Image (cartoon, rainbow, N blue to C red; front, side):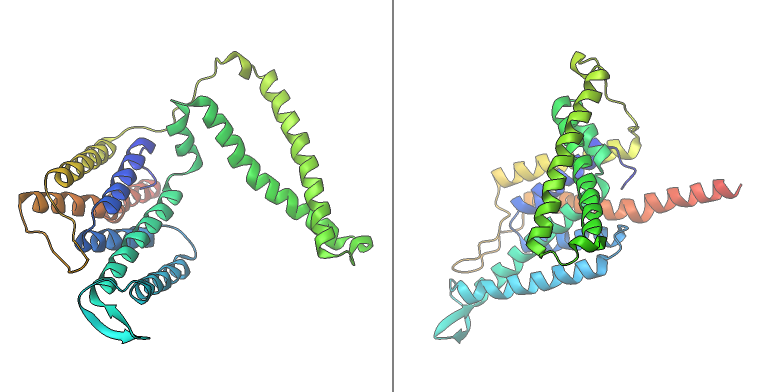
Length: 289
């Protein structure tokens, strides 16, 4: 996934997120959630089990909260404080939680694979000034955090300020950071002016190659998005939860969009498990030679 072209990676995630949010069907929500969990487990995030446990807890809380406060539905399971807890509200809460969790996990994996250089590549071709501003912000934030840590360590080590109150100490650190950021901004502006940035003759470098898997990814993502919009416009694939659960009749539209969406949801998993693994094995064998 991390070797995909920025355009194909962005197109894939736009298609997946749009399909997850537009289609209100528990089957699609479950498949999207399964795909997002699997692709999340394929990432190189160090604390992914801890994050996944947090998402699971969030899923349980949201699923339980909805039927407690939402009493719509014609099938009460039991009464809580003389108010019904309905099956329809519980089912709707589970489906909504699955959609929300899927979107969060897909966005979390997107933040891993869509690195800063890929993001700047996507924006820089069409909006170069915004790309420059974004690159400066992305660089400025970690620099400012590191500089703040240095100032805070100095405050803690300095014996004269050892007994300084917390609010006063952090206020002085913030004042020093503001001064440093202003000086750094002036130096950056002078450097950009000396390099001829005002002339507008700069061109963005292209470090990414568009391969066969990128073409397949863009094609699959485009077909998925177009079919999702078409089927949603001409037929009904969404489930009605209130006042009774009404499942739409199975037709060619539902079958076709089901196959396409399942393929798109599981394509990143397939890509990670097979294509990336095979490519890494080939690279390892070449290094041994």
